[in-house]
Image 1 (cartoon, helix red, strand yellow):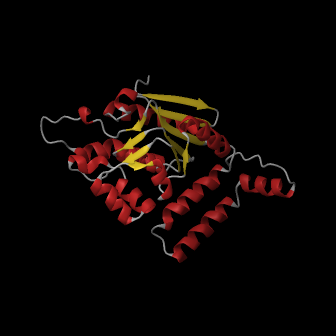
Image 2 (image 1 turned 135 degrees about the vertical axis):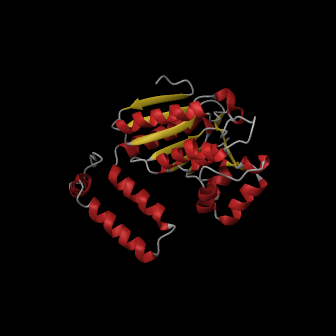
Image 3 (image 1 turned 45 degrees about the vertical axis):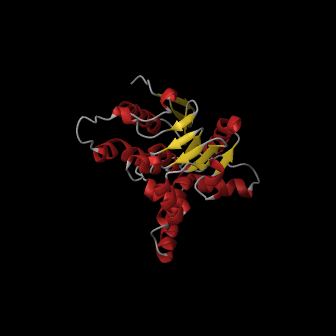
Length: 259
């Protein structure tokens, strides 16, 4: 498939997917979702060990492109969510490799929630997050009610959902919604630096850590201890664990293969 609305780069184990409708603040259409699905298929089929997700131009993603919807009758947003947005969020959160999001500008509506679904979220200092749904009579979707509540707490989640005011990158960082704020002109370099580090790391350990952290919100302490024991037992049988121990004892850098 030739891409018209996204950019895709594969540099060894590092993949980069960029939303590429800068004149529309990278708002998402059905055609764009189809390209994203095809691109993720290619990324998953490659020897990918980390993915960078970002946007072209002055915005990361403004969410659903309303002009792409048919308003001649009742609009079935459930269909749009179940067909496009929910599968995308699920693919990002269940990926077999870490996903870095470099939020280069405004992340609004579902665009904000796609960003928050990623493992490590970097935001340019000039970026902002906006749960704009209430402005058009909707509630945050694409996992927004879940991610906002988990990351910022219910009080702040209600404030963001009901007031629909933009949250600066610095505010998102202070609330624990993102990993770090980066100067605008250094954002992509920082994302690339982190990607290079993760691409050389123990991929299975990363996946297990993500699984355990995701489960921590619903597990009791006993359940979490059991899960950690199960996952750690599996990792102890991995080649990367043996390499990590050997490297530690030999006082050299580890050469992880992701296996």
